[in-house]
Length: 173
Image 1 (cartoon, one colour):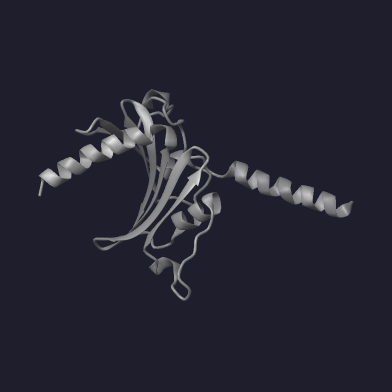
Image 2: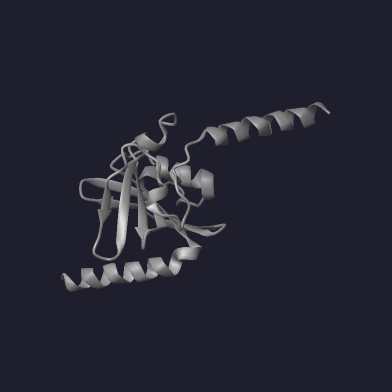
């Protein structure tokens, strides 16, 4: 009986810790950017492909959870519907986004003997109605971690959007 209460207490502690963790998903997929309730309203960046990005630093979203400070959260709205959420963490060299992704979505193997901060590549999960991708890559003067979350319901919209971006990039060569 004592073991049961110990397990129950442990579960309660873990549940409370997860409840206090930052929720950067301030809007549901498919909702309009008008659902964002922040003062002042974040800066938006419309693009030529029918998208509009709303960029919010993690510090503004998670004042009590400093674990991902230094991360930019980019909400991409296509046809005024939230279609993608990206977390961008550049030149922090601490792999906190990797740690977050592995704890939330599941672990993946890194080659034995390779330090975690030297690993570059990507990993994908399918979680409920979402596609989740973690990327670690080199950029000018450092590296970047990206966590990208796309709704399966808006996957075709993202494909069309990305195709427009790709065609434009190809035309700029």
